[in-house]
Image 1 (cartoon, helix red, strand yellow):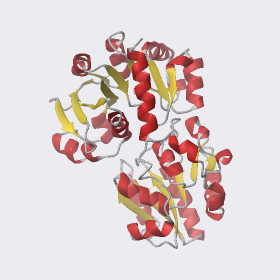
Image 2 (cartoon, rainbow, N blue to C red):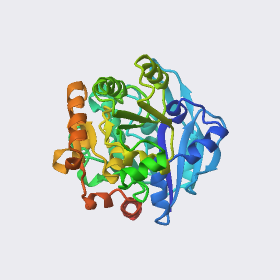
Image 3 (cartoon, rainbow, N blue to C red):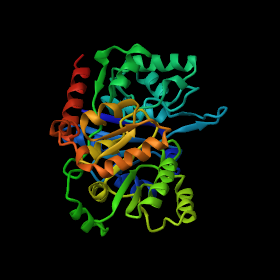
Length: 391
C-alpha cells in the first residue's frame, strides 16, 4: 500500500530557503520533523509512505531520508493575489493519481484564509479518486470569511477521514463544519520514546557539558511571531535580575534570531541564554532532561510536538489554555500549568511555582505514553487505511 504524505504548504516559504538539492540533502533528509516520524511509523507497519514537499524549484526530484523512506520535491506554481498568493500544483495531482493508493495530508488543515488553498485544490482533484485524509491542527476558524468557510467546509466534507489531537478540535469540526464524528480520528503525532524519556539531570549535564547546579528554562521551536518567544525573553530578563542561578535554552532558528541576539546583548545576558541552534532529536532530548520547565506559549490551537516530547521526558510544561494542550497539560495531569496567552504575570508566577515545586509536576502516567509511540500510531493509521480502501 503506497501512501502519499502531503504538505499543503509551499515549503520554500516555511523554511525561508529555496528547497534546492543541497538544502534537501543536508537539511530535509536529516531532520526529525513530524512528517518523517509519521512516515517511519507507517513504514514499520509494512506500508510505503512517500513524503511530498511543494517547492518553487522547477524540477521534480526524489531524495532518501535518513529513516529510509522516499521524499519527493514537487514543483508548484505561485501567483500573487492581493496579499495572499495562489499556489497550486498539477504535477502533485498527477503524481498522486498515478502512483499512490491513499493521499494523507500531514500539514495543517488550511494555509490561506481568504482564497482557496493547496488543500482545497488537491481535495477537489482527488475526491472520489482515492481516499483522502486531512489533518486538522490548530488555527482559528473565526478568521475565515464566510465564503472561505463554505469552501473549507466543502473540502473537509469531501475528505474520508480527518485527524486531530484534541477535544476542542473535534467540537469545531462537528459544530462549525458539520463533520460527522465517524469521520474524525483523534491521534497524536508519534515520537521516539526510546529517545525522549526520563534521565537523571546529571547524565544530561555530562552529555551537554552544562553546569548541573543551574535551573534551566527550555524553549524548542521556530523563532517566529505568535510563538511567545518575545514574551518569554522579557519574563526571563525579569526573573534573572532576581535569580542569577537561572538560565534559558532556546533551541531552533527562524526570522527572529537576530532580534533575539540583539536582546541578549542589550540586556547583558550572554552568560545566561544558550542558543544551540537546530539540533537532531538525539541531542535535543538531553536538553529536556537538564531543564526545569518547558515553555510552550504559542497561539496555535494544535498539540505541539514539543509538549509530547516533554511529557515523555517527565519535564513540567507551561502551555496556553487553548486547543489540544488542555487535553494533555495541567493540574489534573500533574505535569504542568496552563496560562492565558497574553498574561505575563501568570507566566512569571507559573515559572516560579514549577521551579520551587518540581516534584509536584512530574507526571508518571505510563498509559498515555503508549499513545505517543510509533507502534500505536502506525497500527492505528494502518487500520484506518484498510477500512477506507475496503469500503
